[in-house]
Length: 239
Image (cartoon, one colour):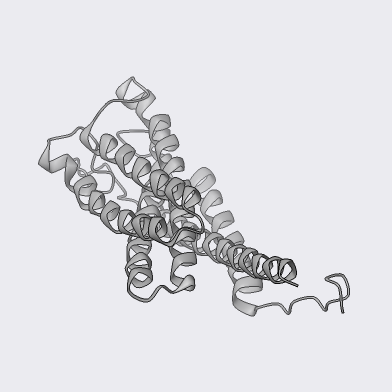
């Protein structure tokens, strides 16, 4: 019987092992250079506005990840597919990471602009609710690992939790919150009026999208390997 050390290394996958890491690194480096060395300061908010080049995309990426969790969870409830379950978990983990970064970068902007690190603005409050929902989703999965009934409850939570996103997006208008409109301003000289600023915003979005996709692909691969090792261990116990 061959051991793991005798086995041939797994072949590289051109997209996930080569192209995706390279595209992530190049686009993120370009975004950092443009945001911190090239774009001018925004007229109203000054240098602190630069955080929005990342903060806004972190929000969009986590929203997309949680929508994917809901879709994959529905797929899992219908078919019981382990592949769907792995993609749901991976998107929830990376989405929660991006939500945490969004909650961390927001106060860095709020302190100089609002004078406080945090306020219970409707949009900020709904963001905390979103974070708690998907943290609970992942905790439920950990507690119910191996129990199909609990895993199905977690899938339902993954679907229901995504309903918080439209409330979060509309919170400023529904409850007259103070969270600013980042991209559009009533001031004709404020916002992303400069073409360089719009390019920086687009490139940072592409970079974070590649980063999100890369992290999800890595997490799915690790989960697949874990499952294969668990099967091998179970087979050895029965021998």
